Image (cartoon, rainbow, N blue to C red; front, side, top):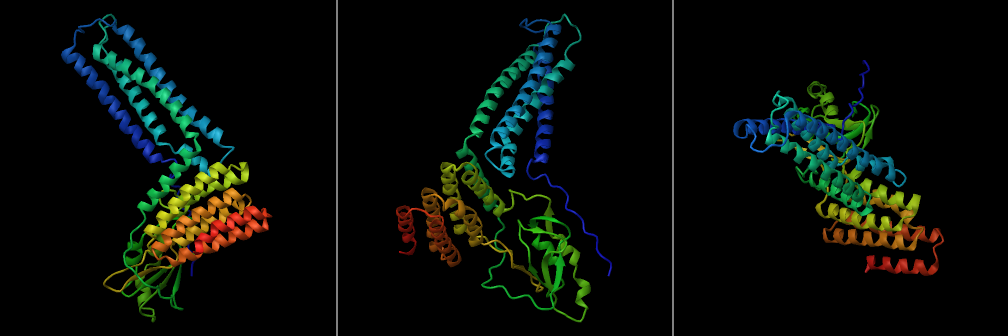
Length: 430
């Protein structure tokens, strides 16, 4: 059998949002052109000749040229301020976290406004009367002045926004909001199953079509690629890394004599697993939560910043509690012809609790105060899990608390501090 050529996933601009930036710039330039033409039309319709002498057309051209140069300068200054912020944060956070500072909606809006202003003034400049000694158009000239004043306000806003971006609580709160947004868009349950059957021994393996991170799984496309009675067991999940050697699904067919084999589209099943070269914080709940953990672990390992670690744990506890409360439905599905898809590998709430705490517990166990904050966070998550009867999360939290206490003892924490920590943990079992 000929070896199938595996392709690499195309680069997806999931972090810098190139599509959003391009669209915003196009819309802004179109709006600027319309504004400039509208100002000239008003001048020619109602204010020509101008009732107020503001100078000549020649003087207005000099003013408009200066305004255009000033707008470009302000736009460059705004970008420079963002560069300063990233440079100042580079010594405090990992490169992955720094992408949060580059992905800034305010910066995109400021550039769009400046683009609109430049185009509006440029249209006025090019469409002004040719008589250099004629009176300058009133509305068009005033429009350029207003845009120039607004650009000065934009400088102040850029400085204020850059300063606010340096606030660690602001960063942590933003990452928390992003994680909740990903949770809001998590796929809803299609069907509820008490348990998932085991794949048959004769199941056929479907290999990944390339190397990259799983960003989405198209269940509908996968199900439609099956013949009636066909079954797919997923072996990958969003946020997982796969290569052409990895099995992303197992396919079981109703018939085993080979007749149904011709009706199943294995390439379509493999293609239903979308891959990208980088992980997406917009769709991957594990990645969104990990960004919060990145800030906490970096604060503890590099600077021993317990205040930032506490800030992270408070917000992380809120996110994990929300995940436990809502749940993470598996992507099970079926149809009237007996086609079924079983999600054997999706994320569960206890998986995310384990993912977060295992990265935090080792550095946290070296300091009594940080350990106490971590146990308090787990207490909050456990309370929600008990209310939802999620025994898997309760068991995972109890295990993690025991591990924190064991690490505290192994790290030589003072007996008095360890005793207070144990008293904090005793509330779990009351």
